[in-house]
Image (cartoon, rainbow over all chains, first blue to last red; front, side):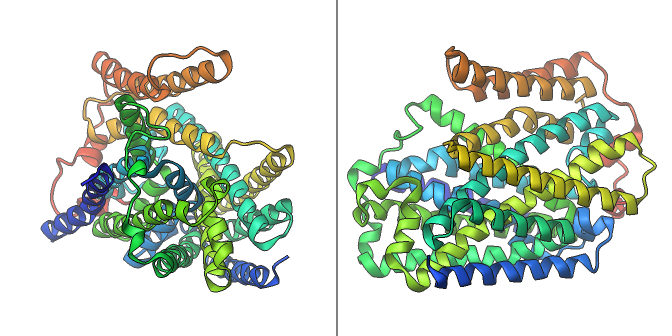
Length: 30
Length: 486
């Protein structure tokens, strides 16, 4: 696999982190 | 002139003007400034997303990818995504402070009206530049696609968004953002769909010479760190995202606004990367770069052309209206009202509207001047602007928000020192021919960080139990957010 795909996977993982974080934190708050 | 595109453009302008008029009929000062702190999730997400996606995203990042391939990730996207994570983590805390402006955090936390006014001035100046660059970028697109003179396009764009912002304040800005966000998503995704239909699964085939991360602005690992810092700080300290926390209905909405907004932005960025990777195979070499997406829309014509045109116009206006709105509000609330704190809300509303209108006129005039005199500055100014926020605002803001030991002098020296560190290094390189080793951001951010920690440790923090309770809790219990939001 070339660097392009690695770079994209890294980006997607960080990019989706806020959704996971926000959902988890909101659930815990309730 | 293309009358079809002109009709689409005019139709769009009429709709957003209508939203401004609607907002005008229901406006209070709290509505103008923070949309009554009652914005629900769908509008919050739409507003964050639309403000987030600027013309730099749609036009600039496609262009950058057509030229530099995979380097777009370390240059911009990784840092931006880290900025979203940071915003998610501080969303509830920021909202709980119940502030009206980002700079007012410094007065509430450190009892420092001076630092409040200084940071407001830095933000307003940065926004004025950003408004001008965005207007110029949007007018180029309109000129090429619709065929109207560039100055006419610029004035149309600017006058309409100034009118609805002045009339409706944040209430109107958030609603136009929602509409604009939908149209941006539609424009970018249909461009991707058309591309997919044109070249099939080849769209996912990346040429070997475009897969390297060290291209374009990135020549070394040091550059990766510098650009990560600029992009991360530029998002995490961006006042118009932080300001939207104040307008959110509750803490969960503030967090999820970034969560869902980041998901949409990730999707748009992926579409942009694949468009940017595929276009060199479809367009002649001289059409790559900033104009690539425009030429692609023109080559397809018809519906895709209209959708892309409207999407780009929306990307410009949704970012510019937010910047203009905050420039007007922060000038009023953080600088002018400090001179006469007894001013009534009614007078403040009139003042905020007038200041917004004057700044709108000023930016339009400045942008027209740049067009007429023919300057090339869009990407340079974007970098300068993002860098300013990473140098002068990021550390003092987050330090004051999260660190109990932060002091007024620490925050002030961090803000002023960071600002000078970045600008002196940049100006010396740009105009004096003196290249300091590394990137100017290292001096801005570095001085800002060192000053914050060192000066805070040798000076005393504000010892007001109320301040500590508001920022770091301690009173505990369920009603905490309610008390703080008053």
